[in-house]
Image (cartoon, rainbow, N blue to C red; front, side):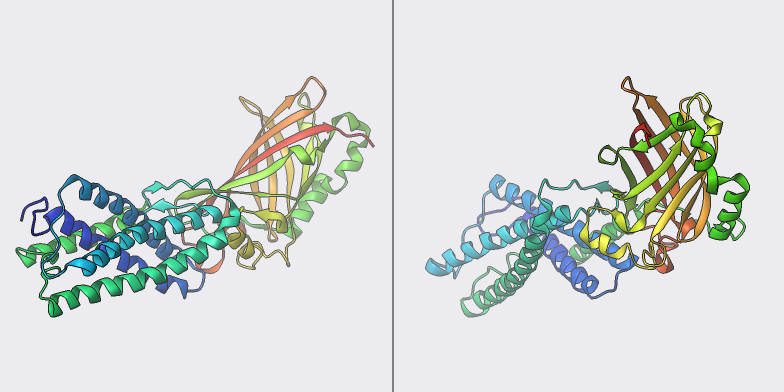
Length: 411
């Protein structure tokens, strides 16, 4: 079989692109229908990631198909199709091309507006389109409508090809069917399916399973209280009252408590919008200082309304039962650059030692720019329980970043 088209038939490239695109479209539709009825779970996420990956692939192949269409001459109209029928056939074909572009692009817009990170077949990150979050709803509606239009168009495309073949004696159907050795075509389809499996399943980066926190490591809230009493933490602010020159106040408008997690291998960002802290610190005498940080867990956002609706649930932050999280330092040490605070982070009643590397930069006007980083394993605090506890779709390690503008405390 020749690669390019001839006057009477389609070449190997055109036929291959036609059937591969058709196969991917049907697969993507099937995945969406199955995943849409599933409860929220790692399996549902994986199916939708595969669905999106196929959509982007269809978009890329449609571009390639159009490029090939202009590169090589197109066959003459199939025999038996003339006049109005020929014009309608051409119109139908261009309509299908339009849908092959519009459907994936509407999905891409919807995903970008929702802020979902997305890696094609778990291999590389697909960038978000620069669209407003307000487009998520309209793009979702357009995506569903375009799916229905595509379904009708494909059915009409197949029906008319059969009608032209049977009623008009046209060769429009036979000249697009795979020619030559059918075993070769079957093998080719098998290879395509195997490649799809490989790039999506085997090609994903392996991530080790989390380590279950032991009871001896997970210090409960009552143990934290005992530790605080031993160290005088509950009355630290009173004891430090004579050192008000070391006490600092957070300028909320210029301060953030943010984090970076991973979703199916792609990074996503979020923050806690409501937090406060008592901070006593002097970089000349760091051992005398302490930080007591209070975080309102209900203020968490990932900038995605879909995700934010789930985070207060019991399997994630259990906001109703545990509306607050705390971080309380127990010691400070000088690092090669900056300082390291040792402290107890308490989330959902579970406390773990979490070191915080931070930089204390005093400004000419007396304010301080505080920059800190820590890494938290979400499973150590039961964030993501049940099926999420051992599934790496939502990454286990979360990078926390603290950026504060501090000013001297005045009573």
